[in-house]
Image (cartoon, rainbow, N blue to C red; front, side):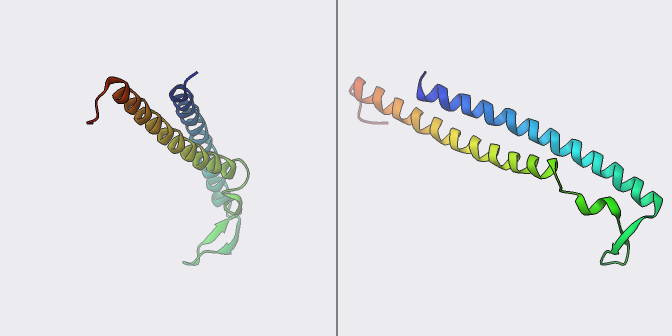
Length: 108
């Protein structure tokens, strides 16, 4: 397999991981939103916010567990995508240089 093929496979893998992680963030956010709404409806509260409004009990773990892991996966897959895109660009430049040298052309 060529270096370009490997980097393109990395781009595809990073895209798939990014999409799955984004789906997890959305799903967890929806679940947290529902639990916050239910907690606010029951009137359970902890410490007040700046404006004096109470914080629902479910709000304290908003970024706990899978949401945090999904956000980390989002960032990691973004970085993986950028690196693989840079590699694909460099390999493409090398292929062009090689063809230019083999073809006897010096101008680009």
